[in-house]
Length: 67
View 1 (cartoon, one colour):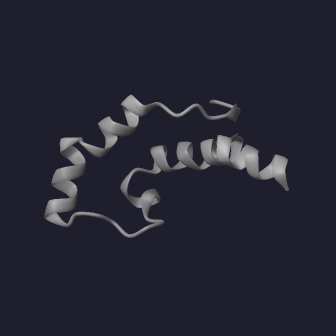
View 2: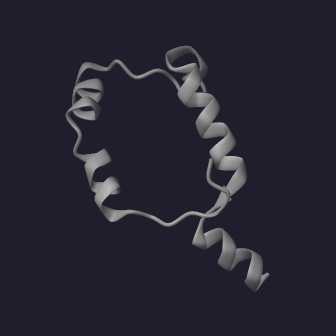
């Protein structure tokens, strides 16, 4: 598990936005409401919760440093 500053990857960002799985899910309306990740994929939801609490972005770092 990563700790500390996140380094964004433009390649992964573009890949996530153009994936066929995302396209199919959005076009068929198979999305679960926000907060329902524990029902759809509990393992990934647990990982994402820990990751979000143990890392921070460069924007958060600037916000902390500037006040």
